[in-house]
Image 1 (cartoon, rainbow, N blue to C red):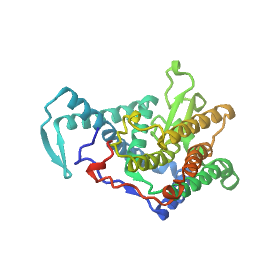
Image 2 (cartoon, helix red, strand yellow):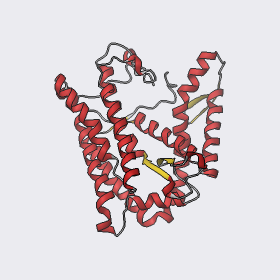
Image 3 (tube, helix red, strand yellow):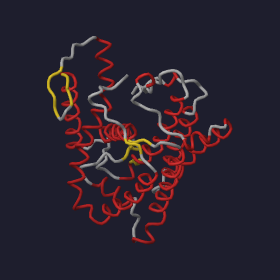
Amino acid sequence: MERNGDLLEAPITLDMSQALMIPVMSSCSLLLMFYLFSSVSQLLTAFTAIASVSSLFFWLSPHVAYLKSQFGFADPYLSQCCSKSFTRIQGLLLLACIFIVATWLVSGHWILNNFLGISLCVAFVSHVRLPNIKICAMFLVCLFVYDIFWVFFSERFFGANVMSLPGLQFITKMLELPVKIVFPRNLWGGASPAGNTADFMILGLGDMAIPAMLLALVLCFDHRNSSDTVNLLDLHSLKGNNYIWYALPGYAIGLVTSLTAGILTHSPQPALLYQVPSTLGPIFFISWLRKDLAELWEGTMPNLNDKSRQIEL
């Protein structure tokens, strides 16, 4: 399913310096939240609400367009806003997204929190790309060190666990930001994120989105080496020897392992400690066996504007 060309902006491809600056900026943001959380919480809430509407609209648009084409709905253009043309159905979808975010603002329910969190991950991975495995590996290794330091060693320098304290403050507020995926341990209890933190398993969005950038990279590599159009919504259209089939299980194993470690230890866990080896490891090993490692290491992203080989989103 292709997205509306008026609504799809060119993705940002990070270079080495930009990728290496992200852990530094993330550390600064973490310290800002640690010391000034009460002062910036309202600003964060407003920014997150706007970003959630935008990302939710981006995520749902191709699905709505697919349903429209399947049922043959007429969808005339209504108006143009901010240089973007909107149809009637897109206008209704935008209103629905605003309603969903407003409902989350009022209720803070964990299901809406997760729904918006997933949409933020999808939008991030779709708009921010890494050009090759070299930059991706450097990026993931830096975040690997970042995650371990702030979870295990920050208390020695700042007197408290900087990584976990902002999360605890978020949870204890009635208004919850969708910066993580939360699952109540007792799904039948009707708990919400405003409840006790012990009732929830927590996975940060960065722990999902950052390794997913590697999946997007290898999927683009598979696409570039394939003669067929890749449909991201139909992975069965990909041949079994593509790298995505080695990256996906590693990604899933890393997620499950990080959640399991958190449950068993009853303490904050650096999810990237499990995610980075489980995703990078299989790709390095298989590409080395196939003698593709050099191409992946220095390769560049395919031209996504090439209509003859466009990846369908």
